Image (cartoon, rainbow over all chains, first blue to last red):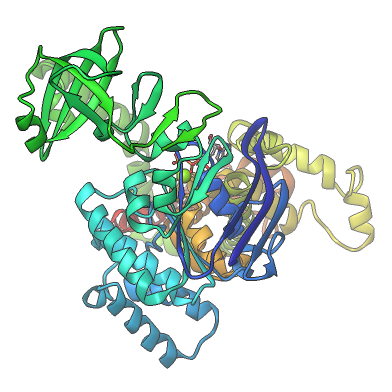
Length: 327
Length: 274
Ligand SMILES: Nc1ncnc2c1ncn2[C@@H]1O[C@H](COP(=O)(O)OP(=O)(O)OP(=O)(O)O)[C@@H](O)[C@H]1O
Ligand SMILES: [Mg+2]
């Protein structure tokens, strides 16, 4: 295990930001810290980097006890949401910073900077100031800067959070490919479940200062430990007292045993999918997502009466805090 | 943008406002300063040459330079340190310290001078006698004059640097730390370059303020002719001794130095924006 976090507590005044958090982060993998805003993701990441001190508990990085090491001794690369570019230095100088601090020979520094700028596709911008770069370029520069010192672990705090949706998607594909090339143990924070599911080898779900679940994207998606994880990893709706994904609800136009009867009250076409709201007889709304073909096939229209059943083998979770999982 | 969307006052209101402001500035600033210049150069450079040949004036100018530069250096070091403390660290008494920094702006310099006498006076002061025994003359000598000047100009560097430090934030410093830089390296390579212009601006303002200090320096210097007189004190004394032309000449030099400071600052300012 590359990073061992054991029983970490962190309070800000009376507020408990992390409550007895323990987690192991595997070597060489891309791990996502996923959770809602204010859940404690950044706090945990900053404690690992030494930018914040834990009130209690220990941190071990690659077998080295790091709890009381200052950040500059941890050999950790950190990438900030808002880039934290050194504004008065050009791109090459930014990337060279860590190497110059380590007093590497000048020729080595130049070679390494060149190599890294190539890696992040910024070689033609070496002499620009950060202010002359786009957000995505700045973030790639920050990544190159963090990689320059060959960190044992790379920590990224919502690295793409300040970018627009398209650049964000490009960059996360790129991060995935980069990681496959460089293989440094990487932890990145996100509150976007799609980002985590798409990019990460392993996901740690954090909520309210506690770890809800750790697992691969498939494990989390298919076997959520509780209703929080289930609802955080994707849309959910309630059908007959259980939580279920909207695309796991079958819509029947003829009566079916044990089905929930309702009326279609809203029908919305968004891109390739059709979002249907069905108001059940007991008055609560069920959300259903169908493909365009399915919707057309079943001849759905607003006002129609339909019978809803869980899809065969669909995942459902009891809609109570202490959740049992059934598949 | 703000201008075009704002409802503008009628023309006559704007004209009256403008006239009032211009008249006010002319009566208060431009005219008196212009008169100093006119009086100094009414016979060409004769009076200026006379004044510069006067050993009392020469000594005063030299002393002013020494006192002002020392005070500025002290304020530079303490100002930057205190600013960092105030913005980057939490400690008990921080609010009190922050409030104390504004004291020199609100207290009369004469009071500052008297307060320093009470502490460092060589016969009755708190530390004075001990220092005098050790052979260190504080009051009626350069050290107390530097202290008085530094005290009066203390807030100027801090008030420039603190808002810039707050605006820059500490992310760049944290990034430097995570890249392996220690505290000192982070300060020299990251923090200082990002507050550089604020520091320069604060230094220039302090210099202008230090050159012009009168009240506090008069009290602690003893105003000894040819020994502990700064330029401002010479102006007053020469004026009272009916050597008006010398007084005007020295006054002109002081005003000129301040104008140079302001010009330097206004040249530096746009650079800081870009
Ligand atoms: N320096 C601080 N002082 C006081 N409270 C803090 C501080 N830093 C964080 N907190 C609080 O701790 C909690 C966790 O913060 P943290 O930044 O770790 O959340 P997060 O999961 O990263 O959220 P986000 O997705 O919004 O960045 C929040 O409620 C926040 O208000
Ligand atoms: Mg955060």
